[in-house]
Amino acid sequence: MRFWKSDKSGPATPERRLALTAAEAAAFIDEVFPQVRGEIRIDGLEPMAARMRLLVSDQHLRPGGTVSGPALFMAADVAFYVAVLGMIGRQPLAVTSNLNITFMRRPQPTDVIAEARILKLGRRLASGDVTLYSQGRDEPVALAQTTYALPEAKG
Amino acid sequence: MRFWKSDKSGPATPERRLALTAAEAAAFIDEVFPQVRGEIRIDGLEPMAARMRLLVSDQHLRPGGTVSGPALFMAADVAFYVAVLGMIGRQPLAVTSNLNITFMRRPQPTDVIAEARILKLGRRLASGDVTLYSQGRDEPVALAQTTYALPEAKG
Amino acid sequence: MRFWKSDKSGPATPERRLALTAAEAAAFIDEVFPQVRGEIRIDGLEPMAARMRLLVSDQHLRPGGTVSGPALFMAADVAFYVAVLGMIGRQPLAVTSNLNITFMRRPQPTDVIAEARILKLGRRLASGDVTLYSQGRDEPVALAQTTYALPEAKG
Amino acid sequence: MRFWKSDKSGPATPERRLALTAAEAAAFIDEVFPQVRGEIRIDGLEPMAARMRLLVSDQHLRPGGTVSGPALFMAADVAFYVAVLGMIGRQPLAVTSNLNITFMRRPQPTDVIAEARILKLGRRLASGDVTLYSQGRDEPVALAQTTYALPEAKG
Image 1 (cartoon, rainbow over the protein chains, first blue to last red):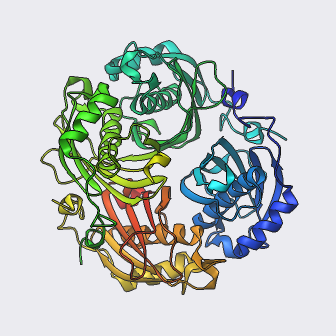
Image 2: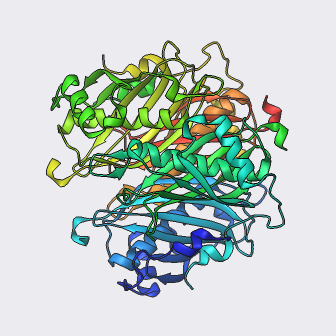
């Protein structure tokens, strides 16, 4: 009976096709969000979902060797943006409207894996969540829920 | 590659055992939250997760026949509380600290299914999410993320 | 130095005028949200802000005499909707997109005062917050942050 | 009638005294959060409230010259932490439990002012909000609501 959610979640419309590849999304992120260049890697992109890695380095670590909250926020925000780009294509005008993040466990000083799911892709808004893990751990370090505002052009 | 999240989520500590049965949880809810008596039904309870049904009637409907936001909030809040009760037992002092809910689709005028997952059960806080569906539909009508404050006694 | 926020917050465009009166908003709420008829009272409506009262009765109380979470959610949601109606007029298609509520103090078994502020009124989204008090108390029982999706018609 | 909220909000217990000065808080932040050294400046600290400035530089800007979302998140998170430090003193173990941020306006490429208020300072949790402005503008660019978990030691 476990994982009811997984029984149902995932692509709201499985037949949807990707508007661009992971490589194209990565190139676009480099262009519109140069700050994260070299800090992230897209590990997977599919309809309504993306998996991204935060390549953790000293700049992301707090004393004691835990990944900082802003670094986790960035990973969640960018991972969801990647999932959105996958569906709507190169669109710099898709912007975060709201992001709620709950920190659950002390991250390890290792890469952070961000798994983003779009649960609703509307004409004007895209909503979903992002689960953040320390590489190799099964228990999430944080869970984010977010809504992006999409440009009319998208419709 | 789909459902990465489901590959990992679910019970943080699978070996955990339930502190009470679905029937015991239902009886306790009736006692501490009499307003919802007759409005909800626990369809499943397992370690770190619960499935609950909002038995939708006129009191939950808005003109046009959609389930009201407060009714969806109640379903999410109570479903997560049921999941927490499953782990910590009869505990009236576990209280909602925060709940964030995003409304994604117009609910049908049918029962609402709430699937709650505890992603972190700490000594003082329990956090997770609740996905809400209209019965028989695969696409969520709303997604909630919540944190409950637990009484010290629990630890 | 206190209340920096209050120095700045409030109407984003003070010159804005109300699209309807408190009485007209109340009549419209009765029409589109009949469940709350008799449960709420609009105590004030002005550009970008509304003050509403939840007329607390047994249906809102939990054992021990505290106002239930769903009742506080409803008060916050409706109060913000009233503030939005004040700006955009009779508009049933303005819907809650997201609401985040943090419960801070045990409410008294008295009326709940909800003070809603619109901090951003866009063409497609209205965002702001709602502070909830137990009547006669100075310390908030809960704080909500919310975004409403507005119908294109509004623009 | 405007600014009801400001009539009431602010220090929950006005008589409370600061546990450290703005300079002591700044020194402590440098120590526990070295990443932000040189990026922030505490402009004000008082019981239950803090005003902080994000000294915006290229690292915070997106193409087009707007401040990035992660930079705004960091400003909100650190500003609230400063307000908490003001009340509980040098306490590295106070950690963000949850932060919800709504982006309202395109920030200017200028310093960001973060105004944090603690609305509830409990034994285990501190909750409140942070309003973010572009320097010299009256309308907020973002509003955050957050809860920090406090170490038992604090009580």
